[in-house]
Image 1 (tube, helix red, strand yellow):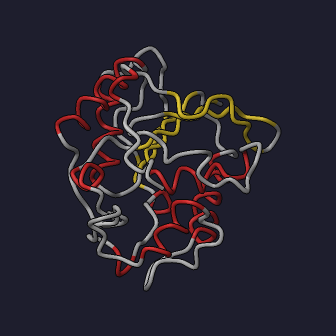
Image 2: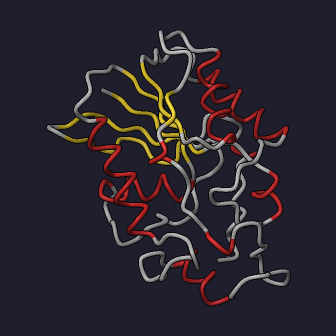
Length: 214
């Protein structure tokens, strides 16, 4: 089995530096285009199963990939374990230096060392997200599929794959995953191994790290 884990396309909140978390929202025109281009690049990978977070930005990203795909799966199954971290009281708040509406030290910890981050007020912490996303991955490892698409979010993706990275203490692996970047897993024993990380299938000049200031 090969599993293609994709982060959703760009949203307005991504572009504006707003904590989005589990708040729903649409893809921007750029987000839709990146999802479409990525789907075209994967058109010859026959997906026979797909799963998505329930949030619209992930559902629409999965839909764009599956629309042009040669496989039998044309619609993703919603699994709530794939939803983004619950940012609690911080959802909808700006976080960039100079315009931040939230605690600067908590924000720094979130972007620099999520395992030292105590969690969002009235939200989740890193370990809670690791538990639910990795539970999903363990269940998926028991399935009998050829190629599977998983559409999720930046923090949730890193949490899900944390145990597969060479250095699991480095939560972000250097940066937040780029919009519509893909990590590829292959079956190994009763689990998976990571064979590609943060693969971008569109023009690299369109790749944006909006969190580099941290």
